[in-house]
Length: 357
Image (tube, rainbow, N blue to C red; front, side, top):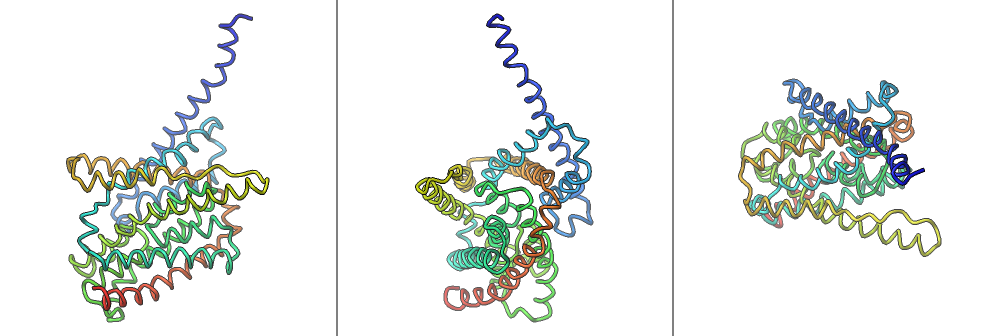
């Protein structure tokens, strides 16, 4: 056999794999485009349901009911969208945050955000693992979705923890349920006089405790434009905290790797969240105003689409049978965190306004 024939026979199996991966990516992109169209419907948009949420739900339905009709070679493209594309999209999410906006709310907004994020992550992880007997990754993903920025935080943690799709799906389910509830409940409680907060307090409380950015805007817009402005900035401050949290998480995981290697067990892959550094870099770029506003808007639109692709791919990889095993316990963890965000969040907001604001 000649060298040429050997090379040809060696490369032959790789071509279908590459085509299959590209077809899988294209399939996810078309799926995400349909999801984006659905999310723009007035009824869906009025519920504050972002394309990311619709994507994981629709993807899960397809993955469990119709996936047998999808060619096996497409799986590589699905995995690429759920993993590598995800990291890129999370990095570009930084273009939605600027240091100038965070500075507008000053120290009260920063303190509120830090206290909420740290306490919710700690409580959620402890409750999930100790009380609800969840595995570590599911507990941390559920806590991250409640503490930082909803589905985007779940995606970022999923990439760092290298967790399984069904674990992310359960965490996103908690975000959908309790974040949507907050969007409708918070304004009702405020107008009923059950939230004794001024405009700044409303902004701090809404932005500090509601899960998704869209849900924050939806809830605060039922109070006043000023409250909406403050709440949005506080929420974006929480998003900004995703970077140090992920870096600390990566350092902790890496230390666990070294401990496992020292004990002679098989170590897991080092978890270095480089996309978190990319996120920070794009925050700086956005803060310097070096990009035209139209370019930033276009990039944010493309980034939302990429995140929708990632969520859709995660949904396709999710199996309902795996979700059922820990679903009620994960939901109970989300409920406990929700009670904490309301009660503890009010206490933190009151303390921040009294001693700092």
